[in-house]
Image (tube, rainbow, N blue to C red; front, side, top):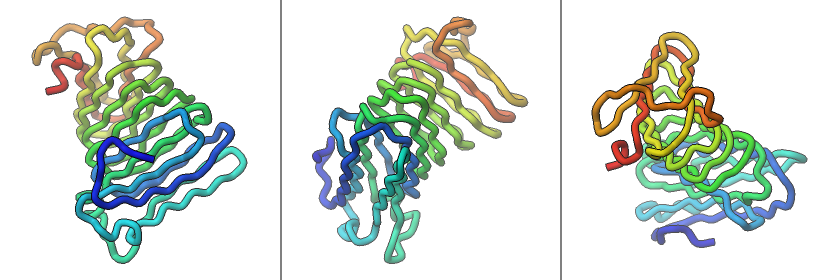
Length: 229
């Protein structure tokens, strides 16, 4: 299976699937992780690098298939450190769109991108400062206590950010219709347009929701044109 960019070194693992599954994925550390749904019938995990020539021997991909669940784990070998993985390794995952139930994903990456997924829910348990969501339908939960920049190219469901003592931003399309909700203790949501604070521009009662949960955290909602440089 080909990917968007050609890398000098790669390790690709594929696995056939023919029925809906819950996905539980643990990837450890990486420079970036890109998760996409597609029209095929194979799970595809690609580990890519332009600098780590031993990537095939230094990382192991394990896929366990039970009745209703797929576990995907990536582990480091041969003394490869987390720092090396974060600097040198990009992970690309494609899962069959017609067989997606719930997705749970744990990763420590500089950037996480999720594309073309329509499922019950996606839970991202991560250490990341940058998240991109595009053509994602359903509930997306982001569990991260770092200050984040979330780029949401469309809203079709719920985006719930669960944070403690963090200040984050989410950029959305200018014509997005959504409700902003705060829960927890000491959480607040503010709004910006053209780089300046503005009155709330959400639509209370709308089906789509941007939600901030946790403690002592702030979320700034801005339009995509302002949030993406």
